[in-house]
Length: 113
Length: 118
Image (cartoon, rainbow over all chains, first blue to last red; front, side, top):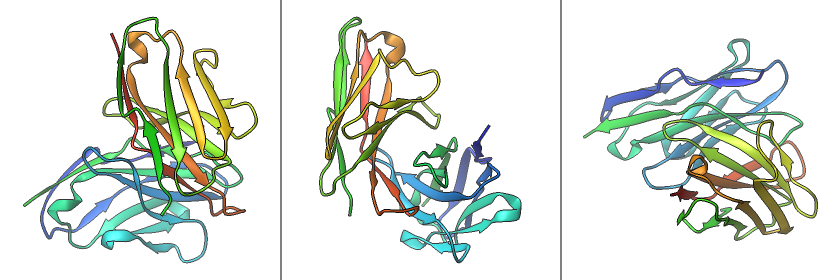
C-alpha cells in the first residue's frame, strides 16, 4: 500500500537553527511531491512542490526540499528558522496519473524565540 | 492565488441531525474537489473525490450514504453528514484542484470546518 512517513513528530528549535524535516514515501511509480504548512488556526498552505526537473526545489519563505529518488525521500530544509515558522508541516505525495494526495502524519515545529 | 473557502467554520449539532458543509473556490473553477477528515494530532485522510456534474468517488471505508457529496457547479461542492453521531465529530477539510491541463495540478485547501456532535 502507498504510504508517506514523517519520522519527526515534534521538533523544537531555537531561532536561527537549521531545519530538516524528513519525508519518505512508498510507491514504485512516478510521483508528484508536496510540502504544506499549517500555521496555528490557519488552513493548509502550499510551501513547495516537485513534479519533474531539478530535484532541488525552492519554495516560499526560504524553504527548499530535495527529491532523492533512490531513497524515496523529499526532505524539507531551511537554513535558519524564525519564530514565525512555528507550525505543523505536512508532506504529501500524489502518484502521477491520479489527483489524489497521500499525506504524512505531520511534524509539529516549535521555534523558540 | 487560488482561494478556497468553507462554511461554516464551526458547527455544533445534536446527534441524529444532518449538517451541510460548503466548499467554494473563490477565484477559479474547480472540476475536482476533495474532502478530507483530520483527526486530532493525525494526518488528513481523503474521504472522497468530488467531480462536477457526476457522482463522487469515495475512498474505501467511507460510507457514501452517510457522507453525501454534491458538486453542482464548478465553484461549489457540499458535504452533508447525515444522521450525525458523536463519532462523526472531526475537522473536515476540502480542497480544490486547479486544472492546469496536465500533471502539474495542485490542490488548494480550505480553512476547514470543526464539527461537534453532541
